[in-house]
Length: 410
Length: 79
Image (cartoon, rainbow over all chains, first blue to last red; front, side, top):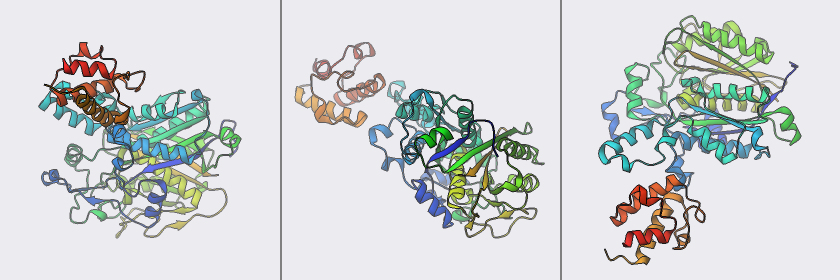
């Protein structure tokens, strides 16, 4: 696996998820097979076909000072909370501002701000809009706020690729370090989209589970009875660093960010390409970029969202390109689908699995769908072996985005 | 409108604390919003709108930029 280029390592992790307000609590809940999906209690659910979601376990208002919270969109609040944890976890690295970058995106951006601000505008007039409305609604707002807080001047970027956003951000950050633009990059994804309009719009696509009588069992990737995804919210952020920089400061290294593979379906704006060609292409590319073979990959955190169309195609593609040996899991069964935040938290979970040598289970599979022949970790977590091992996080998005990121054990 | 300077100051302190987190006790008449309190122009707009609601006095945009200190705002509201 020796390559003639800058090696990129992961030195800090941060999340806020439906399972917990930080990495430790989210990870232990995940290993315990818990679900973060709950009934929604707002009045507006009465008119919707979906009456549940996976809200964050810790409201950002409990963590952030009020003057700060009121000028941030909810997605920005999540991103800042996760970025602060990741930065502390990395040991608050000393790094020259022009060697520090930020890549944090969101699939939808500040949608709750947009809708609330439009109500304010119609009811009270333009003078009553918060002067922070624009920085709250723009999808690059999170990246901007994090850069200001950390003093990052090497470049601030916000990838937008629907549900692949978080993973694409990690890939872009790796490339910033490999190409010498930065030594340290804070990267990930965030989303705060639990709003009646979003639920109604996804429901109009018939993409969401309507298991209203049993929300905690609604997200069930690969189960024959799955009926759609469950909307979640939160953020996942990691600190990436050149190996040289990390070693020089004696940082704890969680894993190497070894490679990234991108492809696009060019097939349908929202439906998965039925043969899985794009998924296989991204898998081949990530192996090539990381200098790995399928045999090296012992764990895959799958995109699997619990929709009828996508889950099995992905499982078949994993089997074909990587093999039937990796321990495959779908943590969305516990967290719901964080859209632009998914690739962020699932990168964190993939890295934690390598570092702690344990794969969290996929919950809610009662009746494995036929055609799924990969080794899915069900019910209980499963140990990974000692020695040099590798794992892949898959993230795919509406628009035809396929992103696979490979991490190897430190 | 016979609000005293102290009453207006107390009201402004509360508004500024709510919007910026600066303790109300630090909001004293001589303080300059930018130089002393580190309040940016966007936050000044929020403060002006909240002050209009609180004191029932319209602060036009072309006047807002001349209100540099807490005392300037107090005077504007009193007049």
